[in-house]
Image 1 (cartoon, rainbow, N blue to C red):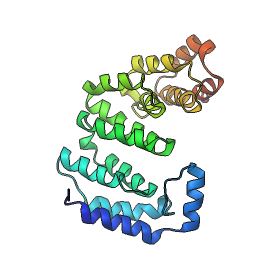
Image 2 (image 1 turned 180 degrees about the vertical axis):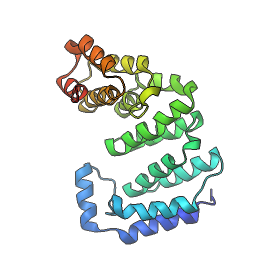
Image 3 (image 1 turned 45 degrees about the horizontal axis):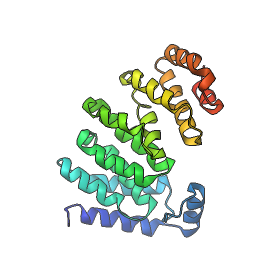
Image 4 (image 1 turned 90 degrees about the vertical axis):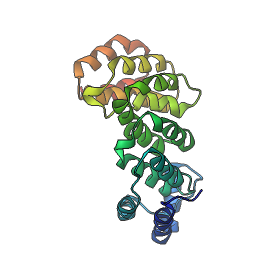
Length: 226
């Protein structure tokens, strides 16, 4: 269905295509280990395109926000998905429970760290601060069959600082300690390391209590700045 954002989105996509470099695109795809196409526009080149998009595509309500982000996200190139994440991040007033379905879709479809981590830490995390009633949804994520959904549950509070729900952080880490996947083990260490910047003693206590069950990777990451 057409929306009032169609022209702004089409213009942004056209600008990315014009700025693209096939050689750079090949390198970006190799680095990200993905078959998803790239235009070959790195972050500095995307910045002015994002700025123009943000100035022309301004959602006025939840429905418009979700249409704008979804229409960007559904485009085929990875840089278009980066724009979708940045646009979603920009309009923080719409980071509430009603947007979690969209954010979950982005995580499931993104299915790689560059897309998932942005969605988890910059979209899901602020949503939980704005709408704590959404926490039961995330409680379900930690039990998901989807690796990236579980990772998102663990890392979603990385920017929460004093708003961190320590009980949930601890529970999510504990139930994940036996996982062998690199991205889960890394997520445990990363989440603990970041919260240590807010409460070092609590993290030291958690690590001490669970040391025998923690993978070396998780332990190294968690204690990196002790």
